Amino acid sequence: VARNRGDLEFHQAVREVLDSLVPVIEKQPQYAENGLLERLVEPERQIVFRVPWIDDAGNVQVNRGFRIEFNSALGPYKGGLRFHPSVNIGIIKFLGFEQIFKNALTGQGIGGAKGGSDFDPHGKSDAEVMRFCQSFMTELSRHIGPNTDVPAGDIGVGGREIGYLFGQYKRLRNRYDAGVLTGKGLGFGGSLARTEATGYGTVLFAQSMLGTKGDSLEGKTVAVSGSGNVAIYAVEKLQALGGKAVTISDSSGYVVDEAGIDLDLLKQVKEVERGRVADYVARRPGAKLVADGSVWDVPVDVALPCATQNELDDKDAATLLKNGCVAVSEGANMPSTPKAVEAFQAAGILYGPAKAANAGGVATSALEMEQNAGRTRWDFATAEKKLAGIMEDIHSACVETAEFYGKPGDYVLGANAAGFTRVADVMIAHGIV
Ligand code: NDP
Image 1 (cartoon, rainbow, N blue to C red):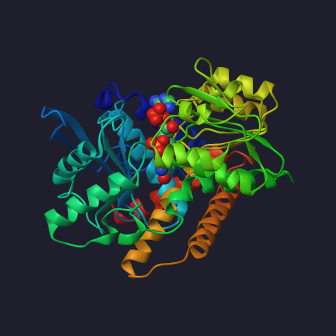
Image 2 (cartoon, rainbow, N blue to C red; image 1 turned 90 degrees about the vertical axis):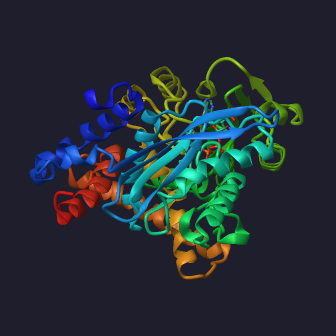
């Protein structure tokens, strides 16, 4: 704790993982030997840097950039970049730590990392975003590479930002390393189905969980939070499977649309116009914007938190349970507070933690790396089929691992233990490094 003073989200993530590993260590004490746990919680490398850039008014702006290369036991570091004013080192460390186990769960040979900046893309012009991305990459470029560290998008980093980052990397390094970033545009090495992957995967995970009870998403009413990349494609897959998303949100409030979210309008507002959920409501008869309160107050069968960390607390969990919610599948990273998770588990509902439920994004990023390395390109159906297979494998690994450690149905234990043992076995094989 002393070494990571103030890194609140990082403490939260480490505690959640280590607490749930108690049955693993009891059964296989070798995993606590030779400082393995101490090494696991210490990033291999932490890079913090200045990002100076000039805004449209000619003023010099200074942001802080981060890249935490957490664990490379299983492969090159892999994890997204987040641009949001709330970003600090504790948030990047929590995300990087979670990424280790998530990436291990995908079974694809990728290590764990995360990065980003406290830069706020909201309200910035394209030119400002480009200058920021170029300055950010000027430092980051010396630390990354297709076999070293492969960043991707996250909050505030989508196709536009990845394009600018890639352009600057190529210019600085004079290398067309298609596999140095994922989430690229389709014209320069991007993979079909990558944009959809995280949201689709989260819904597929919910479907698999419901399947263990002989149930499905067909006919279910669902609350989705957020209105970005993950939320949009969660709504899309949900509709394809016969469920009805009745909410979306952003930091200004949440939308209730009892008729079901209009996906085309949502994409137009968010992806084309870069607008807000208020713009959606303005053009959607019957939808209302609620500025105060919580999106989880809306009575639903299933909840898909797809915005950000700690967006669903114990009060929200109690409301969801009171309203008869039977499943929660996390699209965002660590969206439920520890007390909310406790409440879901105590009530015995299906609870799919982020590192399993949202692993579809990074899994498809690894598929993008595979296509780049092979100089090939799969069609949408091929990429989506692989994604669905990976999500099914992750679900099975969680279920079987939870059973192995004597807690059937505990997806938290299942995900943490399955991810951890894969990484730990390789760390042991590599010796004390
Ligand atoms: P986007 O930037 O596309 O969208 C983020 C959405 O969440 C926006 O609607 C945003 O609203 C809202 N949001 C963000 N921060 C806050 C906040 N502090 N309070 C309220 N609302 C907030 O990001 P993504 O959809 O890519 O990411 C969403 C979540 O999914 C994150 O937790 C991310 O780590 C996780 N994730 C994403 C993956 C991906 O492939 N993109 C992969 C795995 C996990 P506003 O515009 O008002 O800020």
